[in-house]
Length: 322
Image 1 (tube, rainbow, N blue to C red):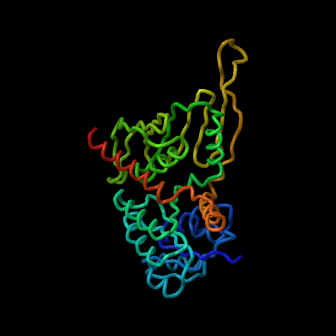
Image 2: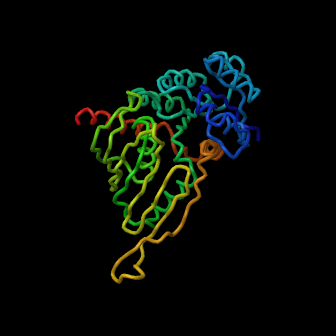
Image 3: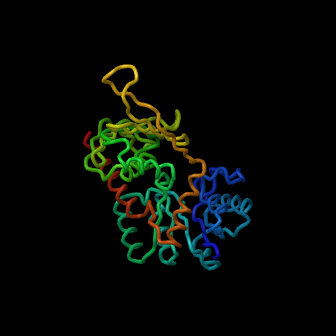
């Protein structure tokens, strides 16, 4: 069958920037590179208001690039539209794209600047029958799918507690882990703000939190992005633990009888899950292709991402009371 055609709206860092100077398929950190190397999609156009970004895109991809959405659709009609503009523009750009009825939309996270706008986009896209895949990328990663299977099979027993470190704001980066833990552990049942700390870039709070996902209390603690990036967690169960860090293999340790001290238990490394996060962006398109051809579930969609936005909104409201 022929490839699905795709266009990108927004050519900043996640659109084309992070891996711009890489020309191989061993590093896929942007939508442009993911589409360039994917066997089932063809990147046919892009849109950006910046002449500099348009020139950069055209130089690397030798593909038509436009300054606005109207000109794009006068020239072509892509099956898939990727929206990678700044968050404050998600709502209006997504509404404009929906009018053209693409087969699917890939939308950067968060869905919108606020929960109200996200809820409206959810309703409109659902009413129009347009699938919106939202790039909470860890849900698409096969390594984390393997971890989810381990949790579901109760190999770690009842997971009763966990600790996660995040940087760069609760809405911007922290929401990734809120979304992930909802997927791994269950819906949010309570939120407690432990410390307010500071605001990232003076706009996005970085609170320390205790959030209950299902039956698991997760302590989410914030670090300072300008010192170094932090994106890691550990989950503690009554049969074992798991350690995750972005870009590193996932370690799984199980409990067994201590070989030295009778009556005690010890943790022993049981397995390690390879974590190919250097090609993270390709996995969203694997899932989207499977959806378009086989009807597979889109694991991070506008419905699940809007629920994540509601949790973030509730957190932001609670920070005002601390």
